[in-house]
Amino acid sequence: MRDVTIAGFLLCGLAMAVLVLQSHRDPLRIAPFSTLLDVVLADRAARFTILLFWWWLGWHFLVVPPMP
Image (cartoon, rainbow, N blue to C red; front, side):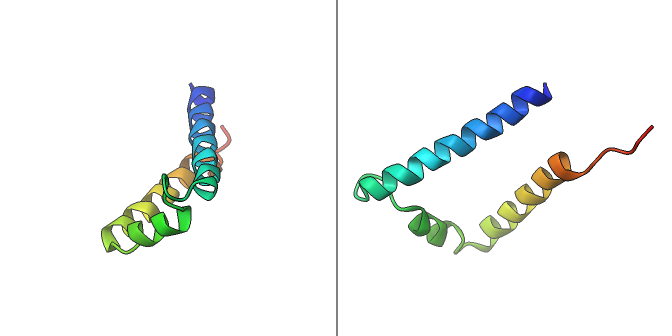
C-alpha cells in the first residue's frame, strides 16, 4: 500500500510539472505557476493549509519509525 501512495504522489508531481511546462508554452490557456501562487498565497487560510500539508507530508515520509 505504501508503494501505491508514493506512486500517487509521484504522479501528482509529474502532472504538476506538465502543467507548469504547458503554462510556459501557452500562457493564455493556463495561468503561469507564479500567478497561481500569488492568488493562492494571498489568503491566510490557504497559507496555513499548505503549511499543515507540508508538515503532514514530512511527518509521514521523513520521520523514521522507532526500532523494535
